[in-house]
Length: 140
Image (cartoon, rainbow, N blue to C red; front, top):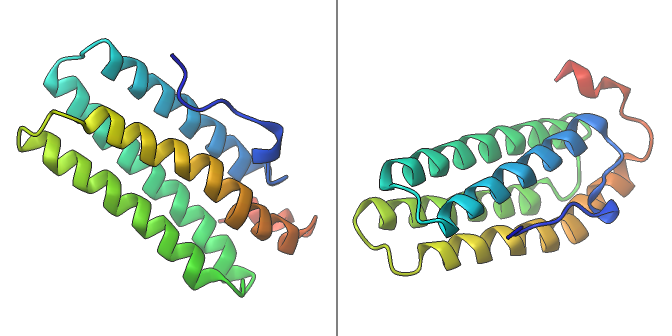
């Protein structure tokens, strides 16, 4: 089952960021499928690590763009990024500690909510602010 489907409204119009968003969705769906098939514990931990690392790297790119453009809601946007990373880290820690009960639902809910809600609010506002003036994106 697919957890998050790419939708045109997720597009920010910044090729590097949109590409990363699509890759993250594909990776999240791969993780979700693996969790549904009761993957081995080590595989789940590796997936968690990959998700966490890729999302962290993506956030670093977005945050560099926001700082470069002196984005007026940088602090709030960054706080949302940190909140999601904290949620993922908590789920990872619980899983590694043996709390397997609801990690699938917790992770699925956190990621699905973030990709739908965060894209529609914070990322879409960022795109509107940037407009078409982002040829420097490849330099970051």
